[in-house]
Image (cartoon, rainbow, N blue to C red):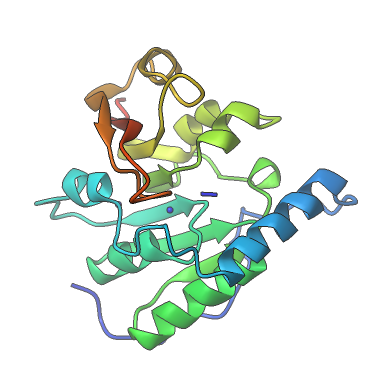
Length: 220
């Protein structure tokens, strides 16, 4: 997971964002099991997960002087949402885990940052079309690989022209590959695409792993 200056404001309550509703149909039992798995993880405080924002997200936006609308997919307890809000983005974080979202809301409130949060199954979430200036997906490789939907096509449609996609997660052999990313974002301008050996944000301190980092910009 499993998440590119602002007036000081109170964090918003959990609200449904227009165009981002879930299916009203009955819930897939797998979703319920997955949600409870992550609820337990977030209740534990996830001591082996980096609390600071993703370094690739920070690097991708360094010197970026036109913050706009951002969606952090699988935001967890909000580390990247807080960074985006603090740097001027109108940001929404979404996660399957209500526990994660409650922690994220509390963290935003504690820092007097404005952000919107949504509990949702990403497979059922309407990302919209030409809606976002930034989409971030940090350590969400399992969703991309196992989703019932084409996650990358949905992200491509959801980005505005000129918008950035920032993806980081575990790489080969069981994670995301550069070949997959380049094929999936054909037609985009690739800003950065690499697999490096590094201490992961998820599972930090347990030895270097293959980490994929990918940044691309949507072209007309």
